[in-house]
Image 1 (tube, protein in one colour):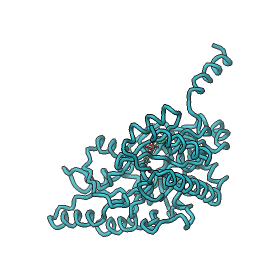
Image 2 (cartoon, protein in one colour; image 1 turned 135 degrees about the vertical axis):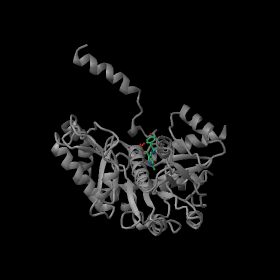
Image 3 (cartoon, rainbow, N blue to C red; image 1 turned 45 degrees about the vertical axis):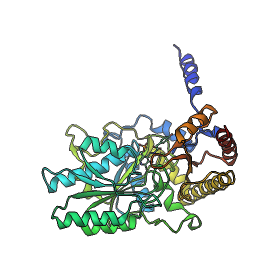
Image 4 (cartoon, rainbow, N blue to C red; image 1 turned 90 degrees about the vertical axis):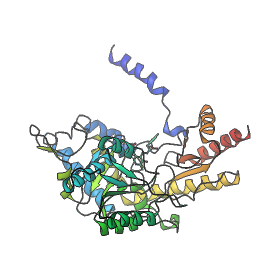
Length: 390
Ligand code: 0PR
C-alpha cells in the first residue's frame, strides 16, 4: 500500500470510534485532550523514558512535571513518575507498601485497608502480590467508616498483632466522586505508623481547583501531602488534566521511597528502574508539562467550575424529571438511582448514549467531563425519560 492508501484505510477504522465532541460519551473519565498536545506528541513521539540517559530533556521534563504537580498538592519535595495510568500508579503504590512490609516482617501477608468503592486496579494488585484487603463498611456518604478502622487497628494492636501495613483513601471515587476523610485517615496512619496512599486519579486535578461554593459540609476536602500521614498519591493528567492517554501520575512524599521500588537494571544509562513498565513514552510527560504551563492554576480552576456548573445543571434537570441522585454531587460525577441500571444503560446505548453504571449501588453513572455540554445533557435526559416510560 502507498502512504495515501494506508491513511485512507485507517480513516475508515477511526470513523467507527465515538467522538467526545458529539456528546454521547457520558461515562468516561477521559476527554478530548487539549489541542496543544497534538503538536507536543509529534515533537516527543519517539522518546523513551525507560532509558532516561538517552532522553535527558524528556527526563528533565518529567522531574519538572512531578514538581509542578507536587506544588498544587502541597509537596515541595516529591518523587514520582508520569506513567501509563491510574492502574499502574495504584499498583506502584501497592508495590511500595508490600516491599516496605516485607522489610519489617517475613511470612506475613501484607494487609491493606481500603473502601469497597476503590477502583478495580487494586484487585489486580491484590492478585499480583497476594495482598490481604480489608474493606470497612461505608457511611451513608459512601466514605469509609473511620470508627471501624480505628477499632480494627486497636484490636490488632491489643492482640500484639500489628499487621495493618497500608490504608488507601479515595479522593474522588470512581463510581460516585465521594472523598474519603483523608485528614482523619492521615491521623490514624501517623499514630500507627501505617502507609497511607490516596487514590486521587480523578480528584487530583479537580479538588485543588474547586471553588468553595461547590463544597459540601459532609465531606472533608483536605486530601494532599499537607497531611503528614499521606505517603503517596495517584493523580492522573489523562483524566481531568487534559493530557492525552497515556498519562497517569504517581507521587511519593519524597525520594526515600524509591529504594522500595528499584530493581537493578545494570545495562541501562540509569542502573536502577523503579517503574513497573520499562520502555515508556515521554509524550505524556511533555504533554502534561505543556498543558500545565498553558493552563496554569487559573485554567484548571475555570475548568473545574465549568464542569461543576454543568454537573449541578444535570442534577437540577434530572430531579425535575423525577430522577434522584444517590448523593449530592461532590465532584463532577453524578449517579442517578435506577432499579435496573444494566437494562437501562443497554437501552440507552441502543439509542446512542454511552453512560456507565455503579457497582456499589443501583445507579446510572454520568461523568460531566469538559466535552459534555448542556445541550448534550438536555438531549440525554430526554432519552432517559423515554427509556423509563417504556
Ligand atoms: N483510580 C480511580 C479513582 C479511577 O477512577 C480509575 C479509572 C483508576 C484509578 C484507573 O485509572 P486508569 O484507567 O487510567 O488505569 N477510572 C475510570 C473508570 O474505571 C477509567 C475509565 C476512563 C473508564 C474512561 C472508561 C472510560 O471511557 O471508570
